[in-house]
Image 1 (cartoon, rainbow, N blue to C red):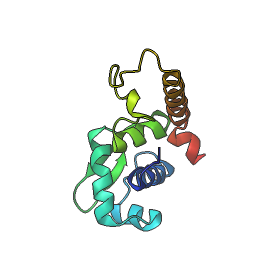
Image 2: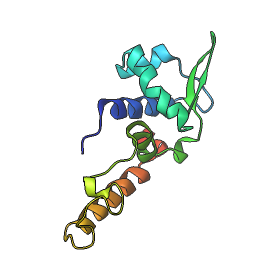
Image 3: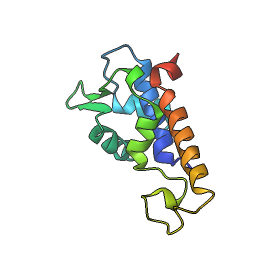
Length: 132
């Protein structure tokens, strides 16, 4: 599993927003400049974050983006899963019955436990912890 450039950029953008004083709106150009994200790519990565309810956008001269939830309520898992969609370590994890060997595979439980461990580590890494 490789975290995409979109997820990595989304994490950096939200960390930037989390580092600002509470309630402050971050300008798109400031996020792009400080996080080295092109404006077009930034808009692309913001779409799933807006849909997931992690960020809010504001139009106009004073427009920009802000976190929709407090930094302690947004984890790396929230960000990555919003951008990437469902994450699986192996195709057999997609759904029960996807693999004909689900019931007898010695490795199936290992894949499941590894996914849970990765998910838990990312869920424990909240923006407030990372900003501190």
